[in-house]
Image (cartoon, rainbow, N blue to C red):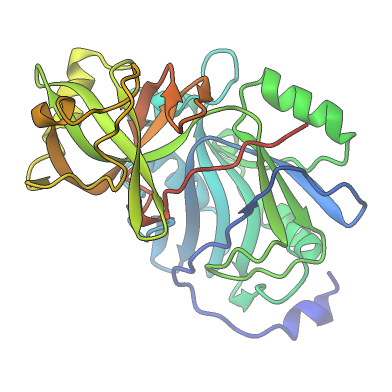
Length: 331
């Protein structure tokens, strides 16, 4: 971007800006007007550098700064009044993303990276109304200021490869999916305009926790998702817990217990291994649907349940009302 063009951009003070979101699709657009990025399984994070220091914000404006101090230290080298959009991702020993590692960042700090993919404010100038391809050019320039700890903050790679090959690689590497963005897209805060779309390649998504079956301290989580104003039951989740994780999850239940079932589709009449019948729900403890959990599973059953579900972790960065049944892409 030319110097005179940059200087003519509107001024902007550093502040939290709600991120732009991608719309779920079953097929990716395939044309030169689009560019493709890996959709990582991590925490959406906005990194802001002011004269006073660095703030790392979640999509809900909660602070991550103390939780990911090594990323904050690296971002101290950015120019003042700069705001970056990206994703905090934990990688396992094979280089694959692991949401589990994000649950204990202090002990696994060397495995955690911040992948920057957009630039909203740079050196006190608002970039919201310039095309994505120009924002990316300036983002690459901004990241060159990070020399110490540069391994912690990386520029998210853009792909122009054959989509069939890209989808195959995403599946093989256990990535969550692929995001396609129009090269000329403006940054539309808080919106899902369709200028950014996401395509899921691996099964697993976030669910709200609406109750549990008693145990030590619980036997299974009862999870579901929003459909309009209703919460619909999807599964009983027993797998994926070790004793410490069970205790940590159970500690979040305090103050959330309610007398009535929050799921609109319970009780169920059918007696399958995934169903909750009228007799079974007598033993359930119900919770306000406020907590969000990430759940892996092999497939949806024809009657809308999860097969072989497994708990991965709590999502404190997600709003429960945003949890809906997600669309899996079709090749």
